[in-house]
Structure formats: structure tokens, C-alpha cells
Length: 82
Image (cartoon, rainbow, N blue to C red; front, side, top):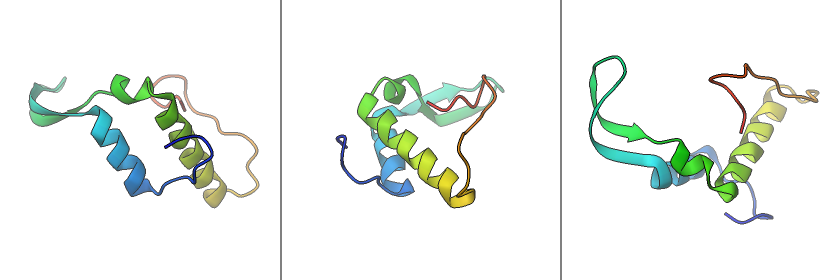
């Protein structure tokens, strides 16, 4: 996923995020429930090449939904577009 390559589809992006950030084990979630999976966002958000593709996908989806949109806004916490 180098700069200049075509933007992968959602499945390709998900596979890359999982490859870098999905951890399998026994995890206690903040709700108290247990999960065999944990996604460590810091493992992919420190990879510029992956963030570039993620940003391209966000922009592509935004253009599909609202072709005339010029800006993307999100709440500062919980939905910060990286």
C-alpha cells in the first residue's frame, strides 16, 4: 500500500487493519464482558501508509454519499477522522 496505488476496497482495507491491529486472546472489555478479540487502534494508526489509504477510503465514501460535499466534519472525540 504505497502512495500512488489505487485505493483498495473495504475488504482489502479491513484485511490490512486486521493484519496489523487484531489481537486474539482473552480480553475483559470495559463492559465486563469477555472477548477473544481486541483491536489495538494504535497498531495501525502509527502506520502512515495505512492511514493514507484509510483517508482515501473515507473521502471516496463521502463523495459517493454526497458528491457536492467540500468538507468532512466529526466530533472531536470518538470520531476523529485520521
